Length: 501
Ligand code: FAD
Image (cartoon, rainbow, N blue to C red; front, side, top):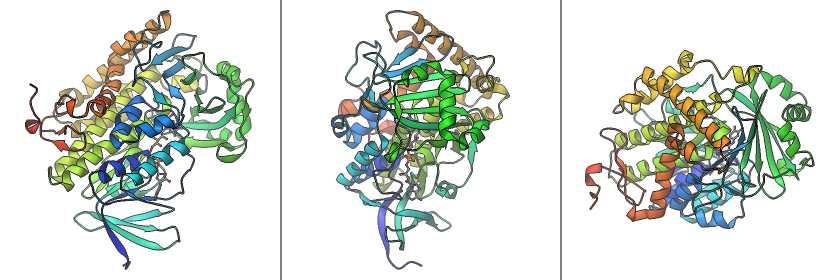
């Protein structure tokens, strides 16, 4: 037993985007929140390309959006892709027309060391207690529930913090998620490796798209090319996991051999120099395996961000899912602490909505991979096996079925498999139409069902953040489910929501 335990309403493990967002949203309700972060910020992290729902939705709700706007991050109007049947790059814009950018139809490309630091400082500013250099060792639990954590503080002393809720936002490397029960299930489909580094002086896309992410498919996989400032670029190759050995040897040689395979990236890097000092000085390797924990919560413990699940980096969904799941969990925790909703119901709402959002991206990304063809490439051929043959589809369907029991379309494997294949064909056709037109209108893409779905929930969070009290009441996601309160900070029963005039 440790003598000096302290007590909080919530202990958050990890101060990345998921942890700091949750901490801010709960502390803003006057609750006692402790964030324990293993590192000292600023620290390097990968995941630099954001989506508008984070910037204009969740970050507006926490109150950090204006500060982000002042930080000078490059504006990302969308993504430019050399991917699919068309040999020329095509551009996906967050706005309907790529020449017009509305007030919320952009996101940022961020140096995560700066972005995460701004978010964590903001959590502190709105009332959370943040302790850096504190590594959580384990949860404190009894038969009934999780009641806190043990951790080593910055002086190396072991301590204990007790709380009504522990939130695991410790990312994909930590083992704490195991304490929720169930297991982490990996998708066969999305198992790849990323090798990445940073360059000074790389070429930029023509205006107005110079802030876009450029994603380029090539025989061994695909490259990301993310402008982090006028001169700094993050460049990474995603390749099949069997190439791990090659990469582990001489990383520099391996990366340059991959660049040689991909003429477009070669052209963009022709006059660039690799950064070899500071936080960007090393070439790093990360698994980008997709996984999900079979359960996201147990009494007293909630998993958010990468601790719970991760899809695939190609559409920059990681930070969106991290901050969005933080918003969902904060609503649940705020509702329980203020005795508006009981814990079981509140956590069920969190988990159903989080899994649905994860599922929407999973489906979209399958369609994204499906549309690129390269008969001679092992990487791309491996992405072509029909989905119905893939066992993870079955378990994935069961998983969604288990929580969103009201929605038949999500509980029937056959219907879902059909929807997958018609959705991806429709998506590929929309991309072809877009790539073939000269006016660059996004209308064909926004008509495609997978794109519509992927934009939908983020759009709603953005609307709510912008309109606040004036936002229209939402309907529940599944039968017996809850809806967000007008201020977006709690859950409430749909019956108690004011009916539209
Ligand atoms: P993290 O950002 O990992 O934060 C977790 C924090 O917890 C860390 O600060 C860590 O130090 C701390 N921690 C860990 N263990 C402990 C402990 N025991 N005690 C205390 N603290 C602890 N996402 C995008 O949005 N856009 C992209 O372009 C993108 N590209 C990617 C490319 C690759 C190759 C990969 C692998 C991922 C990419 N992602 C991208 C995903 C993105 O990196 C993550 O989804 C995102 O960082 C998750 O945020 P988080 O807050 O859940 O976790």
